[in-house]
Length: 113
View 1 (cartoon, rainbow, N blue to C red):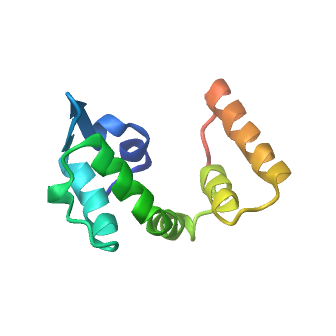
View 2 (cartoon, rainbow, N blue to C red):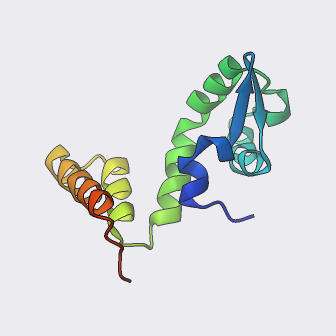
């Protein structure tokens, strides 16, 4: 299964919460299963929001590594911004890229590759 930016940006594509219990979608299972397993957490045992938060915090270094690997060979605005954040670059550069992304979104411009 190929997980898109839209899947990740819309958390309803990943999981739902009902009365404190968490339910993963197929997309969520595909995204989180491997990340959680890297830190010894079986996603089938993640049943509550608190357990999910714990698993997310514990797997955070792998998440950033995974995200970076997905964008490493891309040079579009979105990828440049994510890589700048992950690489902990100068905040002015990050702010500049975020402002460009915001302007692009507000004006409805599309990237040309």
